[in-house]
Amino acid sequence: MITSTTPEVAERSTSQTLGVVSGEAIIGAHIFRDLFAGITNIIGGRAGGYENALREARDIALREMCDEAQRLGADAVVGVDLDYESLGADNGMLMVTAAGTAVKLR
Image (cartoon, rainbow, N blue to C red; front, side, top):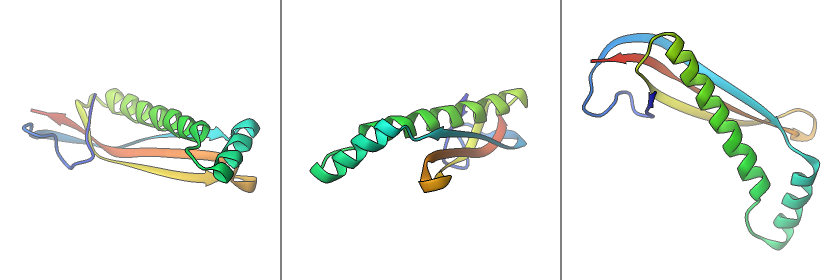
């Protein structure tokens, strides 16, 4: 499935707009990841555990969005937007939402 943050796919024209598609992923922030992120914040550097969790959540959200587009018979999803949020008590959950417009290409 072709995905693009732009409103169209380069060098391809849209023949039909099929509708908005989306995918969501919510992942709990593990206590050890929190502990190591706290240490990283104190000594400096990158919080690899959080980066990996966000990457995993993003991949899941994009995959779900593409699966929905495929069920509609789409060739591509254009105008893709990714949103990141923290949820729950003490912001203990990470949520990623991917949304875009499913289209058929010529």
